[in-house]
Image 1 (cartoon, rainbow, N blue to C red):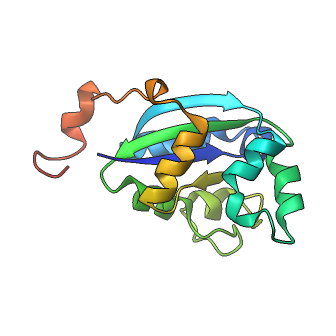
Image 2 (cartoon, helix red, strand yellow; image 1 turned 120 degrees about the vertical axis):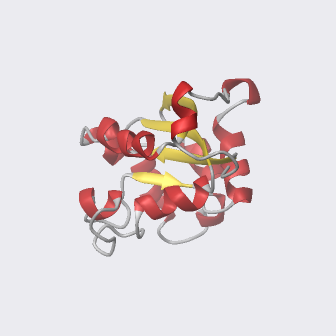
Length: 153
């Protein structure tokens, strides 16, 4: 089972879309194995977005991500990194296809509701920033046998 980091960003919470967006991942059959609500501090933002700190757009990114609470999650599932990113759609809501989360709910590049890891390496790094190992609870839902056929996982 692959893991990924998914953050519901300030615009998602401010617009009251957390439940609606989270529901789409659950309905897909992905497992939420860790979740917490927090405020991203400037220090945490610099750690999370380390590759962007020296870029000209970073101050606006930090101001945005620290403006309101976020919900950080770890999700598990087969090919979960790819699946989540496809469900989100293109980074810019204006370019994201209808039917994707960003295509349905976003009209911005920065205010695009959700951040998701783009590789196994970034997933491991981002999960470690936000969660201690004991906060991640892998489990098999009772309905798991109805989500994938034996041998598919």
